[in-house]
Each structure stands twice: as structure tokens, then as C-alpha cells.
Picture 1 (cartoon, rainbow, N blue to C red):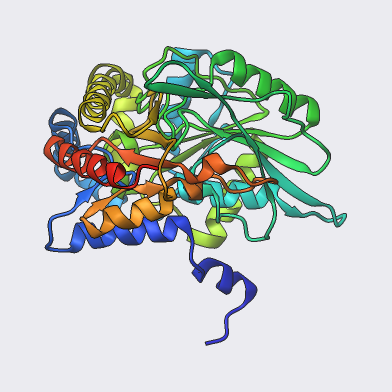
Picture 2 (cartoon, rainbow, N blue to C red):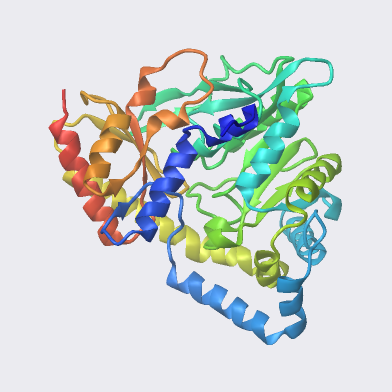
Length: 417
């Protein structure tokens, strides 16, 4: 079969394809697997009961039930759901926002495919525009989103070793430059894969730099504030007309409804909506309809702050304790300071093999993690650090996480230099 350049790009081996393939096999297979690699949120009983109640209410309302299953929405999204979001943001954060500033997509991954290809690639004047990622490592799911090759540029973070257990990445502003070849700037907050949270000051500085350069600043808020609230630092949600804020219902416990939320300047929203119409016709309704009452009442904020955040913070602390207890003293490792998201980012400083090879060894023992190499895309120079880290999802069942960490410790000790 002869494919186009597009076809060859999107069927070739990629980090996100391998990750999702491993996830699918682990979920569908009959063998016992410690699945610590994917981005699946935890099953929180209290939250699951809330979604069950929302679905029960939907099935009792024949009109809403019919709309949710039998009608196409506007390519922009369900107007009532969008209005609920607008009022929630205005009420709680005093944002100068209208319904023209929000579009819904089929998940945030879909949103980033649209956004990256709106702002990167060769423009009408023949200039090749790039997306700048000012804090590398960054999310594996971005790496293969662009249709045109060579349009991602990343800046290595500085590394601050806080003590003998933790380290933290910081944006290296001495190396961040937004030139004429940049079409947009993008960060995730909290950062996937590291759990790093850019401070309010860092976010404001990047926002100011992007605005002065005349390019949009994209913030991926899949884990952040105000929802789903898997963020262990007190931060201020920021938005203005030069910021594109991406959110999702997935980490609230609803990954299967595929509902992404884009908050942006109205011209960008028109462009996203147009892409929706061409690629998808419309978006799925279920997620929007069942969660709308929670946005109207601000209950979604209560769920995020008082149920979801403490649940994950406790899980994170437990996973860190397990690593401290199980890892051999011969293994020189650091954990990125866990400030949010659902992952621990582990840096092995004295192994004789790469993180990719460690991943393969773990997979043979039915433990799935993600090798760090995939999160260092777009670098202009090689960085040894990129082969020394793994991402571990701590959100799964406690027994599975403990088993997986114990096996990780065993395998790491076998390959110490």
C-alpha cells in the first residue's frame, strides 16, 4: 500500500502510538499487568457515584436524552454547556469572556492537533513557523501532532537538585527567545510528564513574552486549576485574549466522553470550530450534557478541590514513600518534586542502560511505564539526561502500584553501573 506523506507520518512508529498500544493490550488482555504507563485517571468511588447520578438524571429526562444521543450540536459545541462555562469563569475569576471565546473539541488531544497545525508550518509567505516549548521535557502526545515536519522547538529546562531525593525543573529564560519563526508558545501546567508546576510568575513572564512577540500563548490545563484540580500548589488561573487555555473532562474521571474545552480569542475559536466542522462535523454531546449542571452550580470546583486533589496528593505521597523504601542504596535516583498531574518522573543517574532499555526489561516482567526519550522532542542538541528518566503513573490501584514499584527497584538494581 502506497501512502501519502501524511499517511506515512501518521502510521510510522511514535511514542504516543506505542503507549496507547501497550495500554490497549494491557486493558484487553487476560494476563496480569501493572499498567503504570498510560494517562488513565483513577477510579475514585465518590466521583464515580457523582457521574452515576448525572447519568441517572439524564435517563429520566427524555428531552435531554434525545438531544444527547440523537442530535448534532454546532461545531463550536453545545451552546448551553458553553454558557455554563462562561458564567462559571466570570463568576469565579472575573474573566472578560463571552460564549464567542469557547469551543468544544473531541478531547484535548484533538484540540492540540488543530491548534498546532493552525500556528505551525509554512505560511502564505513561505515562512516556516514553529511551536516553541519553553520547558523540556514536555508531553509525549505533542510530539507527532504537526502535519509538517520540523516545526517543534524545545528549550531544555534547568535542573535544580533540592536534596538527595528530589529535583525540580525550571524554565531557563536566558535561553528562551521568541523569534520571527515562532507561531505560538506552549506549556502544560502541571507539566506532563514531570508533575512540575510553572509558578504564577513564570506563567506571567511567558505570557508577556508571547504577547510582545505577537504570538499566542497556549496553556495545557488538562490536570490543572480550576478543574480537575490535580495540582498541589496554589496557583492563579490566568486567561486573556492572547492566551489559549485548553481544558478537558478526562481527568475528572471521564476520559471516554472525549470532551476538550478551548478558551481563546474569538477569531481563534472561529478557526477551531471550522476545523471541527471539517474533521468531525460536531462533537460528542454526552460529556457536555451530564456535567453542565455541575458547572452552573460551581459544584465542579468543589469536587476538584475537596475530592480529586486530596485523593491524588495522597496517592503521590504514597508512591514517593514506596520508591524511598524499595530502591536500593546503590541506585542513584531522584524524583521530580511532585506538584501535580498523576505521574512521578524518576531520574536514574547511574544505570548502565537507557530508559528505553529499562522500559523493555520492565515490559517483560509485565510492568508498563513510559521511557523518557519520547518527552524530549524538538531539541537542537543531544542531552544525555533525556535517556535517564521514566514516567510512572501512580493513579492506579494501590496494590498494582506497589507491585510495579518493587519490580522497578529490582530491575534498576540489576543494571547499576
